[in-house]
View 1 (cartoon, rainbow, N blue to C red):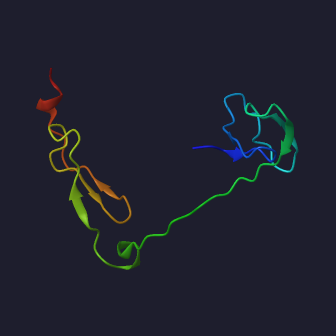
View 2 (spheres, rainbow, N blue to C red; view 1 turned 180 degrees about the vertical axis):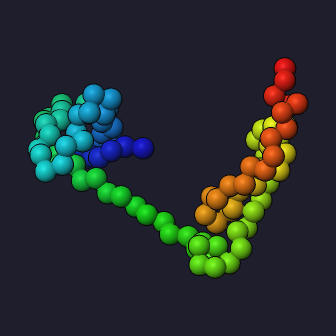
View 3 (cartoon, rainbow, N blue to C red; view 1 turned 120 degrees about the vertical axis):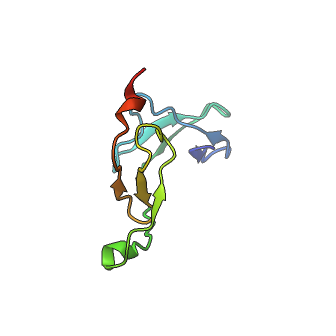
Length: 99
């Protein structure tokens, strides 16, 4: 996936952000196109995207508890609500901790 296209040749540009380059908002960043070798500037806009889910258990309904499949020997009764993430680990099977 490319980050942007060159405004001169429309070549796909992918920025390396490992050093933090290009993350500052409201600032012009200088870039050279590796397709046509022309320089251009760009600005960054950071956008957050949120997705909402119903959680009826937070509004008086029962939790929808489902078994948690990782580490079932230590926590055989471990359950997590599929709506809100609430967890009940139950009793620990200490014999499963012995190696």
